[in-house]
Amino acid sequence: MNIIFQDNGNHLDDWLNALKKTLPQANVRVWQEGDTAPADYAIVWKPPVAMLREQVGLKAIFSRGAGVDGILQLAANLPQGVPVVRLSDAGMGIQMAEYVTHAVLRYFRQFDSYQTLARTADWRFLRPNMRAAFSIGVLGLGVLGQRVIQALQHFDFTVNGWSRSPKDLPGVSCFSGRENLAAFMQASKVLVCILPLTEETKGLLNRENLSHLPQSAYLINVGRGGHLVEADLLPLIQQGRIAGATLDVFSEEPLPALHPFWQEPRITLTPHIAAMTMIEESVVQIAAKMQALEQGMPITGVVNFSRGY
Ligand code: NDP
Ligand code: OXD
Image 1 (tube, rainbow, N blue to C red):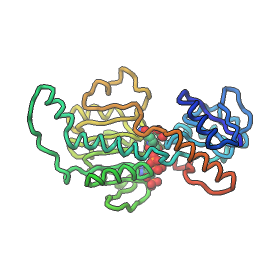
Image 2 (image 1 turned 30 degrees about the vertical axis):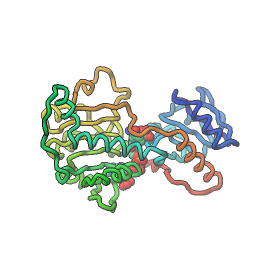
Image 3 (image 1 turned 180 degrees about the vertical axis):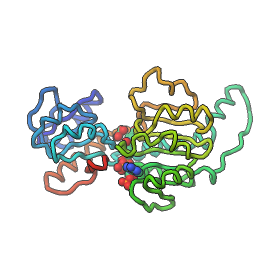
Image 4 (image 1 turned 90 degrees about the horizontal axis):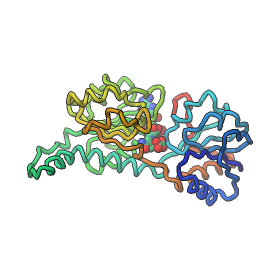
């Protein structure tokens, strides 16, 4: 089995060692510019077009992430009929649950306000937020969205969920489709975006849709930067319409040093680390799927090109 691996400067040795350990019989080579020699499988993250365009005989392209927007943007140049396979959880679910729960509890329990008071030795009680008036809306009820919801439910939060197709999840008020987006937003004091970036979801977090949120709502975006119309968020925060945001993903990454988000204290920024790819878990998952494909067995996580995820 021949595998081409795209090096994007992150932990190459760890990936190669894990692949060697898990697939000792495979011949893994790091793709270099000009390499068009045949391979059975490619393992990539935002690959250059030249890596895949010339490949004949590929059996599958494996994403090193759950999101595949960085691969599908090359769709016109991908070898025809080759499946793209995304990571399903692979250690990311628990991280996403930690990240979102932390951001929700920080806002709900007003830790930032208490920290500000503490700086001036101000011993004061703030009126607590009422859990009953603090519903959390999760956009995206896939592998990661459902893991996040499970974590939030441990704290007895009321949870709303929104997906493309209708869902029935225990204890969750499920909404689906664009026609129900406004009702979902109106019912969600905290909005968590864990959607894939597709033609349909791009720019979804715009002024119009965000304006359906209740007064002083809070935004957490861990999906993709392209979901948020960044220029629409700042005025909503400055007008007090939205209380603040925790953002892990941006339309341009790294976020440029002069971007106004850096200067807005009500926005907490992290550098796309909400759920990081775990090398060991990912390699085990990818290797199991390669072995299944070799035996003609079906696999999960195959991307639907027309849906975009
Ligand atoms: P899944 O494919 O398992 O779930 C995607 C969910 O989004 C599904 O519930 C799907 O609906 C819903 N969805 C897709 N399109 C629409 C639409 N047009 N309208 C309404 N709902 C829609 O993905 P994962 O949960 O594994 O991952 C989600 C995303 O999280 C990734 O694509 C990536 O962008 C992001 N991510 C971010 C990371 C970070 O560190 N910040 C790390 C990992 C992932 P349905 O159920 O009906 O299909
Ligand atoms: C992913 C990511 O999609 O890390 O896996 O963003």
